[in-house]
Image 1 (cartoon, rainbow, N blue to C red):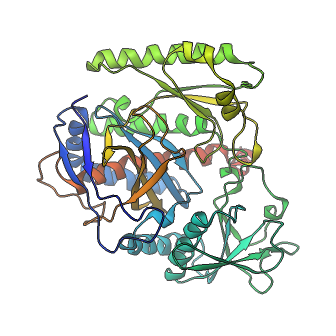
Image 2: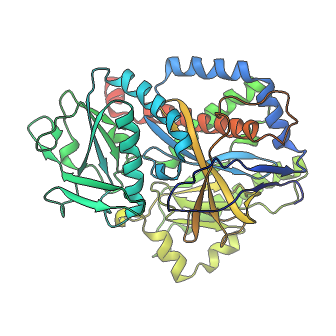
Image 3: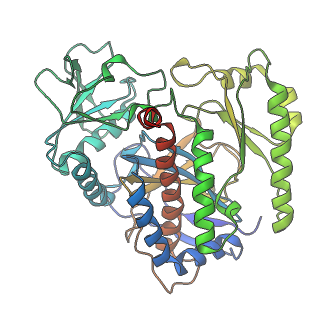
Length: 453
């Protein structure tokens, strides 16, 4: 497809030290299709869009922090995954930190203005020092926001303060958490706020239950033991419809179709009739839209676990025939996700190909938000994957992008399709739509609110 966006970016220091200079992609594009039209619509509607978001945030509470994976197909731009326990903060450059610190200040002020101590609880996989570099970055952000930040762990293997050396030369110390009758903290540290960077895929540890006068962020029902991607995209349907009506576009241009199957066992081959039927219906539905817009590419869908993260339990399906010849390796991959959780529910999501490149490798933007603010992002890059495949897979690397201008200050008057700040502003808008959908989702699934009804 000729209508594609090529991002010429120097790829360096991946998963290592941070770049000392700003990296802003040079956009080279012949794109004149719907994405440029969408960019023009968004820029022309900027005052209305920002007012719309302000009014939404008067009624809804944003997740504490969020990252959103986007896919730009040239003819369509849509979120494909929304993470409420985002890792990867180490992939944001130092130039992005002031925005993150300011947003952290705003978030803490709203939740616990008198806060002085914050306990950050990471995932248990302490052998992954790159993940711990992400934890160190979060610790730095909240320290610079004016909080005493210490790292607690629920890993039973850590029974005393343990220090880890990181690839960046930094060090982090994890301390075993201590639960008293009503509060959670460390041996000599009583926090007002507890921030989870652990997505609770394996369930809710009892120590997080029934805390007294402590703020647990995100709330427990945001954990993957309870959360479902299909619930999120049901909420996103509402958000996309409202936004599309606001700026006068077809909501499909920013929204992937989806369906789900609630009882599938890949290992035993049960529930496949549901999966085959839903895949067939969705492919036909997508083809109708492709015909409407004159898109000649072949539609595909992504089948993935309805709960879970880390790019696990995902496969590309281009035809129902693909489901008839699933090999043992794919069955095993689709059967279990993080923390050994068995896959029984799947979401079938419209595949959005990526037409973005970093040094000719496939790439997709990932946008990071704290409170309701976009604070930065990076490109996930995978030279071993195709335009219609999941990039969050072995071979993935990350290109941090330090914006010359903040993502909320587009350059009005620039030629559409040639301005990095304008393109990144558009990405930030779509990511905020997904974040708003997450706030709807958390309201829908809040057990406290349900009990009050």
